[in-house]
Length: 375
Image (cartoon, rainbow, N blue to C red; front, side, top):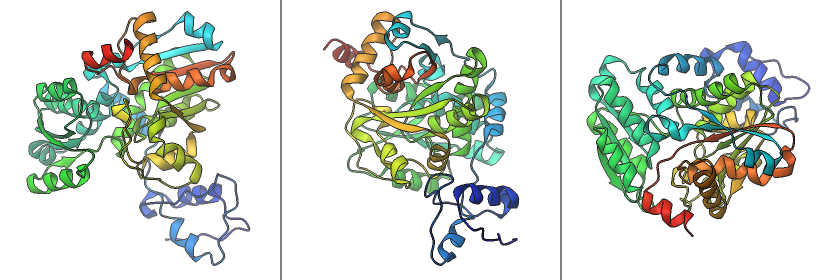
């Protein structure tokens, strides 16, 4: 491997250029993204930086999003883009809602799941797939596995919405439950994978998952044209990082915002500190975003391509659920309302702009839905 020549100033731009010059075949596996691009990296001995320069993972690109779009075509729905004159007036902008609650399994997760499973080789297809999820990734994997003839085992928290557990089983998957506050899902999944020879497909930190999720924003921008701002819900970062890949390619000037639960702002902390921050499982009604950290693949993409991370309170999510139901006549789960809640609180800053909002899913128990919106 050719050694890089040390420049007068070591910046993130220089690191990226060196990575591109050498190619992925010479790159080790991880990177500390450190400061913002263009800011000088101070390293007294250079040896520490020397160890980190070539540790960037082989991140997915927009080319992977394009390939994913080809794989899922004819299997995933091209979901509608909806408008609301009421919200346009309230915010003073043109708001375009990408309604992934009308996707197969009721959520965007089908996109990444089908893309990932469609790339399995014969051995993997025969042995089966393993996933862990609070619900939507579980259903996406279960349905995709059923369509592709692959056995599926799903590790789900025992307090996941009953409708999501039932739907996952209904698609033919074997469900293994655990206590999300006391047990380690990663350890459970790893044990099952080793014992049964299953291929683990995590809910967000996987290149095929990221690429598949990015197809939603690709479709949105192809349909409505370039956007000034884009709001995307944030849990582990699969959707946000995939969306960022698509938005940066198709609308380079678009401002990209991730929105996560106020009670679980690990993504916001990570984004602002420059390193992955891990937290305890947050208590929030947004069960699809009860993640404890960003991923090793999703974080560097988010750090590079996203403009900011916002948070939304549970009360704001309930208000968004109520608006969707009463004015747009659709059921949206709490997690699915994160992006809209973020755009709403941005309010006046979006005046006169064209704004994309990803509505991520509609899988919520009707009893819980009625209790929340009826408050």
